[in-house]
Length: 208
Ligand code: MD3
Ligand code: FE
Image (cartoon, rainbow, N blue to C red; front, side):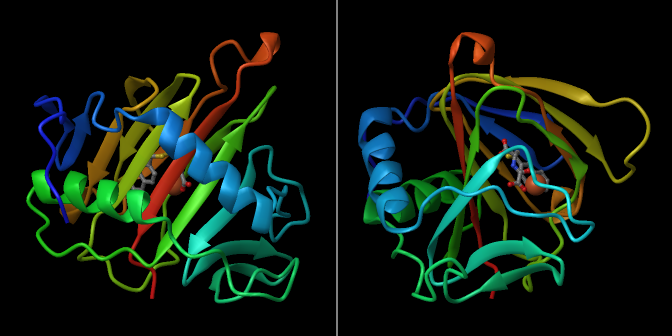
């Protein structure tokens, strides 16, 4: 793990145990190129919910485990169900970014084995849900926004009730864990999506 002098030193706790690192992923072109390389081996696809509806965000994964959804439910898979091959390995610049972000927030040995990549184009968004398919809830989740901005909604322990709204801009990183690890959250459409803007989100987890 390296620490670079370019880290912008701005950490804001937007809700208890939800920390926003504005501009932390500064070299977005390198991350975008790595997303393209992952997608060349494991293309973006619209997964089916267990109820049989296509998700509006397209997804792919890198790392030893990849998140998947179909009629059998939500789960992590070692192989890409589309190809039967292992997911592309996690690019080192991704691992380094996730570990530096987690370290900054006090998680000293975050070792993500899964990176879910979401792509939001057109009307794609994500409704309120919580991430509950991982095994180790002592580990944080690190999320990175690339491309277009979007509004992130933080509900906390209850799906209902008022949400904290956070505008996530490209290169913003969110780290949440501990009491926030099981909180409900949602994300709106990419800003400028009607004009073709696309948002990518990297979500790093210790899933296995
Ligand atoms: C807070 N992704 O992939 S990232 C997801 O923008 C997901 O693609 C959204 O929610 C996106 O599951 C939001 C921020 C995020 C992700 C997971 C969380 C915040 C979270 C889990 C617990 C608490
Ligand atoms: Fe989520």
